[in-house]
Length: 135
Image 1 (cartoon, helix red, strand yellow):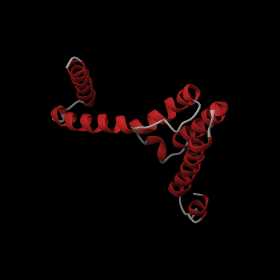
Image 2 (cartoon, helix red, strand yellow):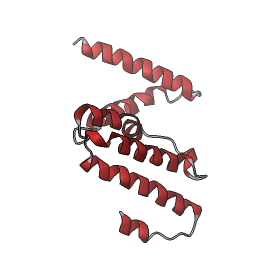
Image 3 (cartoon, rainbow, N blue to C red):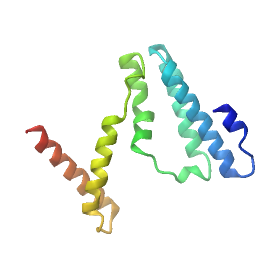
Image 4 (tube, rainbow, N blue to C red):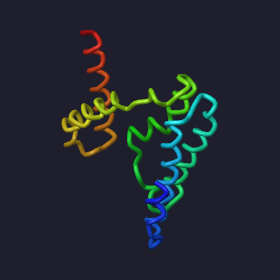
């Protein structure tokens, strides 16, 4: 990653912003393969720096967070403490749920208010979980 980042020009604020984000993400990524239970504080700090890189710039502060990013930022430290490694930390189940929710969202897309769409989507998903858990 360092070789790639070294070749990026400093020609604009967008490039500088993306470089900072990629550097912070690279730090987190490297920890995933090496971290053990004693590295929780280091991981928490690396994740905070990643969040700060997104929030602190004019370009990226308007970005929305993805479910995968939320899972990484909010739950990786807990997983490391519980399992002593991040190698078991997977988003595969989340990918399947994300796909289902994207398909279900089409049902509510015609509604003008996004908050109403999301409320109905969450309610619909909850009903599906109850239904399929009882099968």
